[in-house]
Length: 77
Figure 1 (cartoon, rainbow, N blue to C red):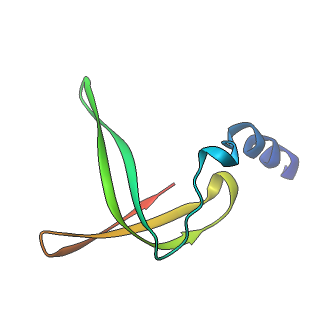
Figure 2: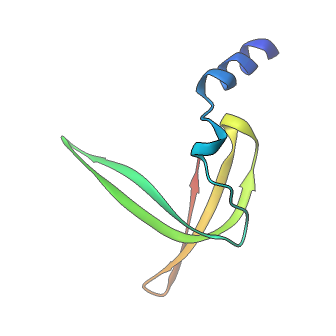
């Protein structure tokens, strides 16, 4: 079972040079593809990284921004 998970990770992992290095405290711009019916658009979410968790394909990170005086946090896979 572990070998199957490792094989899946290796198949779906992006090369390290495609993913820039960042850590909590850094300000990042994350481009998100939004699908609305038949239309799609790219939306940029700009904020400060407050957490990173996991490793490899299962890694996630949380970005926080202030929008109209309200804090917004979003988790990205």
